[in-house]
Image 1 (cartoon, rainbow, N blue to C red):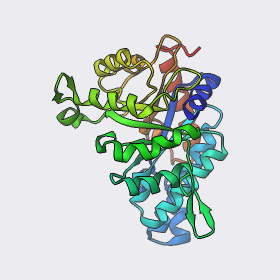
Image 2 (cartoon, rainbow, N blue to C red):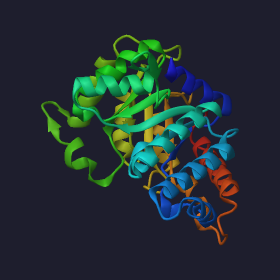
Image 3 (cartoon, one colour):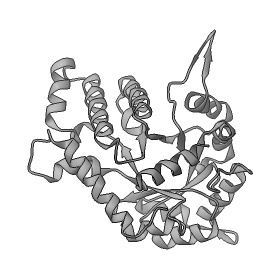
Image 4 (tube, rainbow, N blue to C red):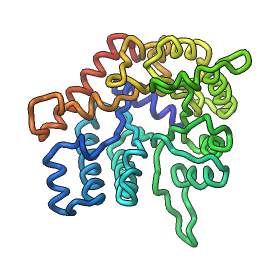
Amino acid sequence: MSVDVLQSKIRKMKNPTMVCLAPSWQRIPAHLREQALEQYGESLQAAAEACRSYAYGILDALAELVPAVSVESGAFLALGREGTAAMEDVLAYAAKKGYYVLLDAMRADLPDTAEGLAAACFGSLAISGAAFAPYACDGVLLNGYLGSDAVRPFANYCKDGKNVFVIARSSNKSAREVQDLISGDRLVHQAIADLAMRWGGEQFGKFGYAEVGLAVGATNPRVLQNLRERYDRLFFLVPGYGAQGGRAADARFAFDKLGHGAVVMVGRSILDAWMKQETDGKDYQAQARQAAAKTREQLLGYVTVI
């Protein structure tokens, strides 16, 4: 079960963080951009190569410290087919380095589309006599607001050791415009949590958590605390930490008394750590390590992982 793999890695490293890989051309150290431009010229290929190199460097730097990474598909898809190829490479490299690997923000609302995408991530696509798994990963983050047509094709793979997170209460400021609306006797994001329990069925790992979990932002600790109290069998993915305003004091509400049941997603505060220093960015790996270690210390100040 992937959720057990994730929890085990967190326990082993005593680090409940997941680093979000969402590189962009403007925020990559100059020497990596210059190398890519020299080889590929001013092109999407150059941007994709710089993103690939930067992501590889982050993965190399954090392999002994961070248990999990998420790969932000939007950051790579924005670069066209070259970006998609780079994303495939980054997913494979992260798995090779031993991380739990999450593919972030996949989209599919029609059953046939979702089934094909689920196979690309969790199974294999049959093309004549060959089989391909271009986006192989341990788990995916899905938009639960598309309903069961978009989620069930992925959830069907949970019996094969994969897991799914669905967005319930996201960390962006405008989330309340939709996700906090009243729906009968509950809020909309609570309705998604109820659906997640249904989608997960009776598939629970050895730590007691369902293979279908929730994404709940650290930027609204009251919501996070309420959902944890109500859904004690759901594993939480907690975005919004750091640059978006979420703090360790907020994220702590995602965890149970053993420090289990959640992983905190951290992005810019680690990826952009080199930008806060008066350097040329060639030390970005060291800066990322320091920032990741600081994040770990902050979280462990409030959460004891047993």
